[in-house]
Length: 319
Ligand code: G3H
Ligand code: 13P
Ligand code: NA
Ligand code: ZN
Image 1 (tube, rainbow, N blue to C red):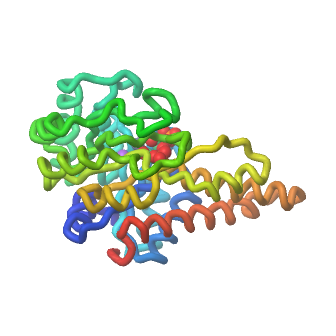
Image 2 (image 1 turned 30 degrees about the horizontal axis):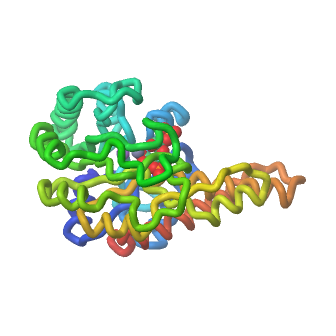
Image 3 (image 1 turned 45 degrees about the vertical axis):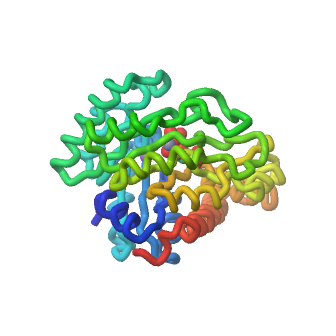
């Protein structure tokens, strides 16, 4: 059965490790994560965005996840809604069987306009009441990540909308959320930094201050793909056209985990791995036309990235 995210993150806090939250849209991505979890004996958070729910017609995705719990009964598995934009979106996910939801009230429903503190508190509180009555975990967000909101690649440490620790404390006290996504210099997507980060990606003093004020709130880092050069190189070697770019170094994520980060969101790295693997098959064996011939290597490539992150974040061995 699917388990609540609170349960997994409480364990992670006790053990001092982090748990990767990987985005899925289809069967192959779910299989990649579950295989990596079995291989590394890891608890897992599988997350679906609103876009993923639309792409998979919701119930396909939900039933694939039920299949995952049948096939991998030994793996504690969370099904989490990533970036819910309204109470209605979160409630529909809870009603379908998600065991955790993110109410991202840091932005208005359009997903672009920054919201007021009061708006964020109101929508988050509404979701917390509904979710907690049903044993479902709630992640909220305070502060705005760079990238999607302010254009790709701020070139430096992207610290325009960093979370204010005092506000974070007020927010958690007012809402009762279980986990809190904070803005400490990361952004979504492949184009996070235009130069190689030099130990200055995460705003560590802010993170430490938030963790001190909210010792039992599980902190969440979005935009945590490392964007490995090797994966970009494979894509470009086989006809892709991606620009030079840098992500969040794994060592910085590990430092975050030492200071209270429990959930680490990764999507882009898996997208890169899948695309590179498929391009390679297309270029090297253009006569092939059976989708399994490229979806299998794609699945394998994503599994490798996920297993690597599970070891790096410390969740390996904790299933
Ligand atoms: O933060 C967003 C995740 O990477 C999911 O992206 O909304 O394109 O599915 P998506
Ligand atoms: P990346 O784009 O860095 O993989 O971040 C994913 C994310 O934060 C999903 O919510
Ligand atoms: Na999320
Ligand atoms: Zn995110």
